[in-house]
Length: 227
View (cartoon, one colour):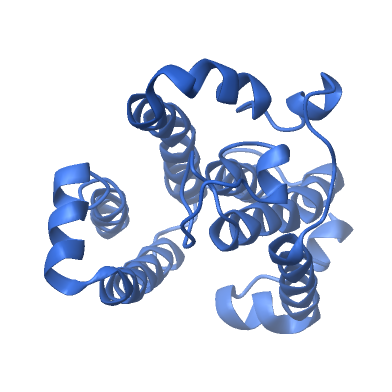
């Protein structure tokens, strides 16, 4: 369990310290934006792999019994989370995390101004519910809480950066998913990044369900439906 906590702490630090404006600005000035993002992505993948390796090698301690509804919930939340994360990273978003610069929000921002954070939250929740053991509570619970905290941290930074125009933009692009659509302030549309994200999510989901998840993590999502 100690290695799991160490890996989780490293992952959280990696996604907290470089996000500080002075640290990020200094790194980009030194390396260039493209090199910085490339190195940061590579290190993130390595640390994430360590985190999952540590979790898989931690003793299984059951906290609650598995059930069919848990597996069904995961099959809904996990792909939705992947879609939000992918679309959020590929779309221009002046309010939140994105690989693209621009002032015109992409289609996914009509759903929520923080798609990446919500995506990780839903993905974590889905995996936490279906696993029901202590190591999953530490892993997915920790990632989920970190993602929720990120919603408010990113909002504070966006408010400070945008200034007087923030209240109007915050009302136009709410934090809560689908709130803008229900209030009639947003419209459901599909742009190129969202369409590409839908295709990527479908491909990843099919591959995971057809054996990819079992090969990577030793657990088949389909068999969980037989509980």
